[in-house]
Image (spheres, rainbow, N blue to C red):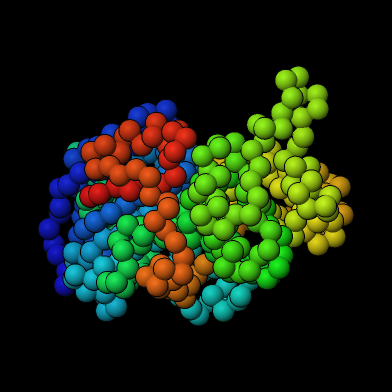
Length: 380
């Protein structure tokens, strides 16, 4: 069912890297041939939203923010057969054709036919959003912080009605990215040792993924003492607060990698997941892994485009890699996580710490700084 009507609604707009987010009245066009227009029900806030609003990886403005969320199909383009009005769906930033070289590979989730896009437009090169006649750019082809949004149908996944909708929103990026990094991307082995740097939603997802995989040692690293209880709820066995190991003059302060080694008999861990996006910590993550076989995975994103890595850490046989969406394929793996949520195999209730309405989203950056904040749910 296609709709020819332009919808006027509210959306959160970022006008520039240094600009505060604003709730604006925007226009959302009808879906074209292979597209779906959704009425958003819930969304959530991810660190990626903040850094994208600051220009990562390219400064595209003005844009409608948000890339986590769940909604209901309002209308579809004439070429869409898989979705219909009323379907509950998640708009995603990765597609999966199931036929290209990458989709047929177990090594990557980056579909060649429906790729990750940072351009701010849909696959046909145009936007479906505007404000006072000016083009608004999409965020990662999603733009979920809007009462309505349009997405290519190949970037949409259906949600089982039995899944709690707030949980579906949390699984649309952050938590799934961490969980997938341990579960699918690295395939952490039973009995192995794991360290996770940064215990936000992504890091907690990595802890949960390592627990589900049977890791025997799971070390969480965070400067926020309140994250200790959260980490333990998801399966963390040891907690490191780097601030507890700093000396007043920094002369005898231990590095994070040394703290991890101190907990593992001096050898380091099998896997280390860097979830903060702080570039200096990537080399620390690598050094925290075992010589000859350790693997560090970059999961978090940051504004600094370049990273300094020790040659010695690499040539001593350690592996460094990055991951998008934790290696999860949108149509193959995300439904499995949604099912795990439905059956309580993965525990998402501990993530929710704050709720807000769409009109309050400009306050989110300050709330994210609060020590007790893990995940903000947006009720649309």
